[in-house]
Length: 72
Image (cartoon, rainbow, N blue to C red; front, side, top):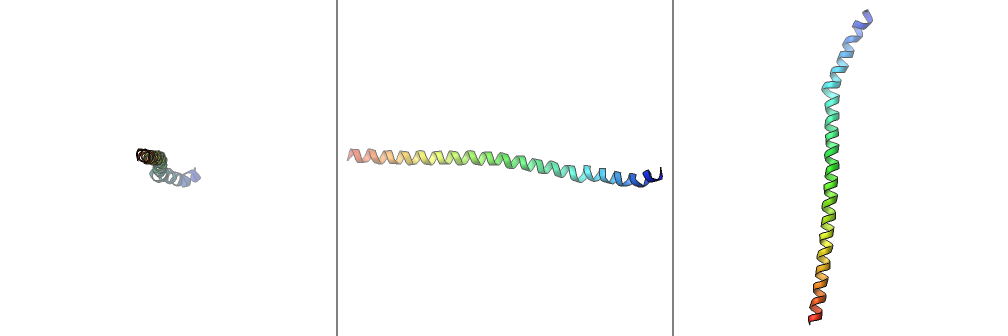
């Protein structure tokens, strides 16, 4: 019984540390990772849309140049 009363405060301190420090930090880290992964998806989508828009503009400018040369 004497050993248990000596170890019990250490166990309680570990449990408090876990719930007050370790667990909240893990939740924040997980939330940060989720946010970063969703941002990567958005950035990838925006870059692909920008590349598509740029290629469409270049195709339109080439077709308008061809149209102008045909008229002259």
